[in-house]
Length: 146
Image (cartoon, rainbow, N blue to C red; front, side):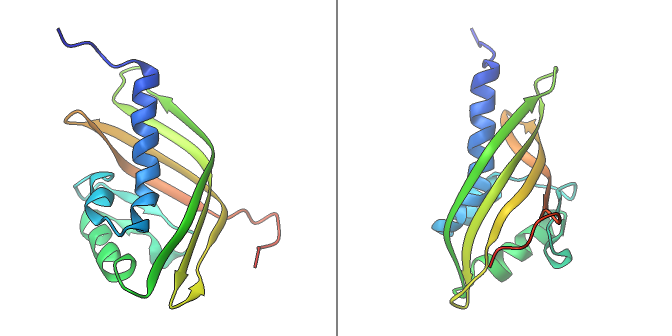
């Protein structure tokens, strides 16, 4: 008999996808990254910079291959704070918000996102949670760090 996962189990799975969507970079495990995101052209996310905004899976793969997989990019560490996950009544859509610190290097220089606001939407497709939409933004009401 198939038992439906509890809300807490679903939220734990969602939290793991959210964490892996950033954490994959430590080992440049692009297959882990790709598994976190929708595999179609509906995938979308806003980056704090327009040149990092993604429209569709093809653009996401191109950004991954053409930036994050380069030797010039090095993931240092990340921290997700105050993660809040909500689940739809139907149980197949979730949305979240959190604060993100993402410390990286580009060509040996710091390339960090500190205290970035992070929101997103996931959908359960074929029994697994995937991110279909994200939005990263930097607060404008306080001075930038660094």
